[in-house]
Length: 122
Image 1: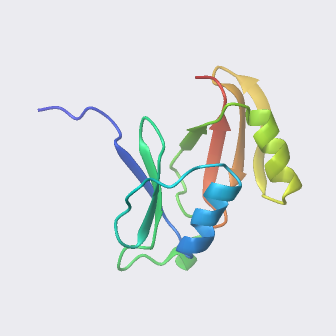
Image 2: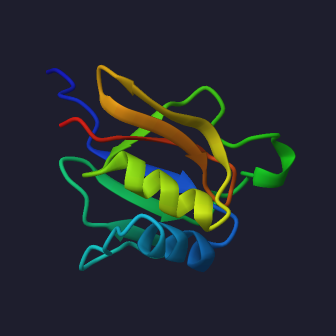
């Protein structure tokens, strides 16, 4: 038996409605037809992505930055345009756009402080 790779990624968030709206309105993600209770799953491929209420015992306010040490990368068709739209909307940009092996790449902080990297090379 072998693990074949990531199959589901979920961020625990302080305010589920606010987080879901951010990912829908700012990144253009669309909700999957079905989500489990206390979560919003997005129709992303090849790996499902979700935001969810914190699990019992998780206190997001007790950490300086949630997800520290985890690299979350999402693909976009046009990273520069998305960067410009997020910056204009006041979304904190953690690392400005650069060109590299994954195309145009930048990192922003979502409403809960998770650092999310966007790249545009498939």
